Image: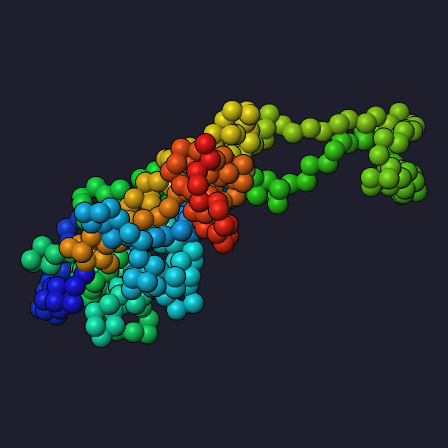
Length: 383
């Protein structure tokens, strides 16, 4: 955004009234059929939710963000562009991976992520200050522009226009605000949490031994002490499979998991799959290998890149184009998904081999991308 547009785009904020007529953000959560009141904090108590959010955020943060300028002669990377320099350290002690993890976490759990675009005296972007969504009240001004009232204690309330913030949102119903996955399917989260709570209460409120001794007659204190001493000989791993000798018509009865408890365990496994569907994350990515085969395990990372990461990369790139860059000078952000091959040594070098053999890259260009210096006489392509 240019300096002139930034200055002329400012409105008289104090004279405007709150006119936002869309759905009210659910700060306090959503009531569900299971009776659980679901909000973002409770949702993160579910291991699958935290794992899905972390998987998308951390992998997105590992991908290199590049600034390009497109023109008639193609595009050129601009590593010294003000935005490229800002991206390396978007805010205070936050690196780019830290900032992306915050943005993805906010948008997945709350439906929206907001950051103030900070400029220097010349109007150049110098930072993206994260704003907790719980501190934001969205408004639509009489002119039709979207604005955000931010109250972060102990600072006074401040209003930001849409051109002064980076605003990432999940799928929207009204074209104004995004809706979180929690608000769209609260019962999925509520049922999963209710099952988790039931399992926790079952462990806390009952003791289920491995078996019971049945004796026809009452035991004297001395007999009870002898029996207890005898049973202690079978405790611990060192006594595993030791033969137990019982007398006086004592009978051992094993105690196993009840069918009802087994059903609860199966339902908890199904809730993992349901939550993964909501976040578009393949179950193997969050360490659920229940239905794994060699084929679907090998394809999980590809599926994750295409259907989980690529859409968020495009959304972030589009929002940078709208709010951070000057749309008229051809500059744009690109999040390089090829960075996923960094941990896949074999695939990466097969790709380089194909590029060199087809005269797309030469050996020195490959060495440069791998972080190595050029080798004399290695510029010619392999025939």
